Image (cartoon, rainbow, N blue to C red; front, side, top):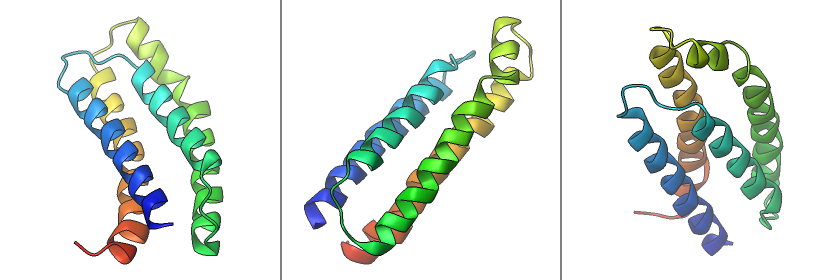
Length: 116
């Protein structure tokens, strides 16, 4: 089970790094946000961890990420297409939501189970 947590954490760190690199662009594209959320959903759904606490956490994070993806399509895509100035700020705000899921996983499971 510890290896499964480590594997998830390593993949989450790669996703976080990718988004950090995108954030440095002047006008970051919106598709990495959606694809990152979709990848996290797939990872969580495919996870074989049988811990009850993790199963409950996973269920709610999948629901949160599905809502995130549904909400993402609206204004953010419109602002990107029109090259609005407010786009970058909204992009960073949306990125923080994904960062929050990753940070929450780390604090709930990695920091508790795997001592540094």
